[in-house]
Image 1: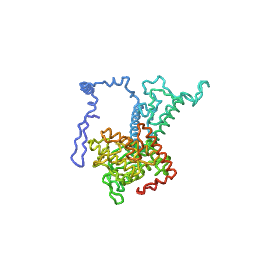
Image 2: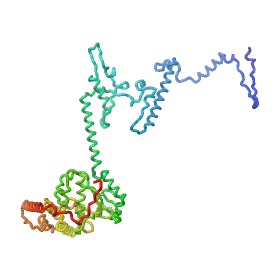
Image 3: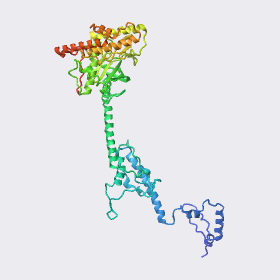
Image 4: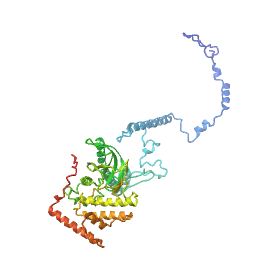
Length: 505
């Protein structure tokens, strides 16, 4: 049949005019060699940069002759993409949870099958990708008999135990940097491994003790959780409007500034301070004598409960301030005592505390006036309040509104204390030395100041030891007299406010 005579059949469209058919082409034109050579010449005008034949003949080219090889390569690439997606889903599912779920069983290519796996999947013994590895990789010897029973390998083999101990180091604390082990055939003996394990255990226990100590003690400029809770309760109860921050730190306490509110419908001063006694007794171990021999608190003193000693210390300062306020001595007013937190009026103005006598620069007349004020205060404290400051110095006296104010009286004791007169002589020495250095000619020496305050008229000699011996003998006579009369002759002053006792105490 002549193909050239075949005419195209035009199909009629029921929805419109007929579509003209494409022009027919004879089979001879398709198989024409002349047409093929013409097309080949046209293609040669744009030669390719790389000859496909050269690419197929190169050594690096993959073998693409087998359809099975192509299918395996495509399947491997698909499996890797699937595993990557599975890892992303695993990370998204676990998030930051401490308990994670692994999708390892759903993976298509496992680490020992995938030579291009990521670094986090490489085991510590896997040195296939290590350029510095030996010709034969180190492997764990197999257990059992080898060489017709001549060589026996058991679980106690030195090489096997060394490598297992190295792998078990991953279970140590995060602070122990063990390395990844790649490129190194690490072998730890049992002795070294046990020593490291015991060291990590001891370090964890020590860290736990340090953390617990910080949680239950008052730091330099911070407070422990229990103290913070007490402070928050004061704010919530309306006693304090807010707590502004730390204004002073010392060996025994931290002082915070706050704005007052109301207490039992009574107004609290606009500005108050919170004296928080530190709950650690590192500095108090040498200061027990200030309170254990005080006849007001001797029945309640105990060395076995440090927190109660701190509360007793705060209670003692409250009683001493109350006595001083009754005698008219310039000192802070007591607002509230809550366990080891003492709330007092603020000595200063507009969040600025009054300067210490050590820091303020006064004229000669004002310094002379300050000396006589201190002398008068010491006499009132000894004769009217029946107290000895026991830590009086220029650091515990403030200059405010032209007057000297006394602070920090938690260690103050009564004169009948076994060491009360010795404490008073030390106070007199501190006061005399300070004012003499500031050029106050009227300042007396320590012995004259002692006699002026106490009115004991102890003979003053050139030998200081004789004066001190006379004081010690006087204290001894007072102690014997107190023991004969009984300790009840020094009760808590009736004018002192009642103590606040919490139900949980």
